[in-house]
Length: 150
Image 1 (cartoon, helix red, strand yellow):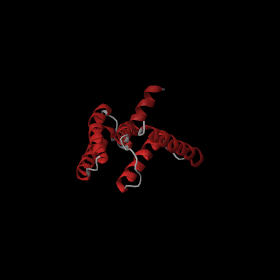
Image 2 (image 1 turned 135 degrees about the vertical axis):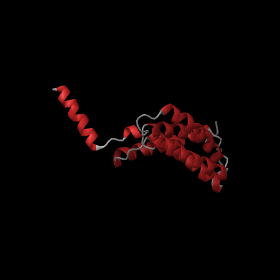
Image 3 (image 1 turned 120 degrees about the vertical axis):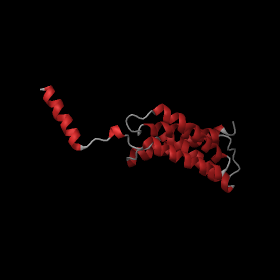
Image 4 (image 1 turned 90 degrees about the vertical axis):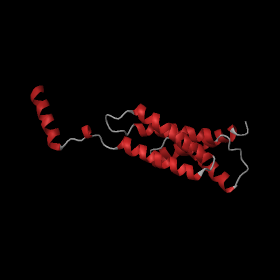
């Protein structure tokens, strides 16, 4: 309980601040996402610099939640025709491995895994050839549809 209570309080406080910021500043931010990410961020910084004698055993769990949540958010931006399930099946395990290396301060391996994640993103987020149409093709298709309609 010594690990979970401070983590939950931090998440709630940071989520509350994010909610206020979203309402007053019109900032598009998910409050719970900001609360979780903010909590693992301050835990990492505190642990790295020896600022607090806190129990960071919740750190991997918080990082894993951010990996899964950000992957699901990224899925919305996939070009048409790309498999969201395949993207998540590739990105989440690599992201979890990266989160583990971050939690364990394995900086070299973290760099490699982040490079692999960038490569995965480059493959999945490149435009598909079928999704690219010239403006004249679009205009011709609209003209054809209007002739059939009316």
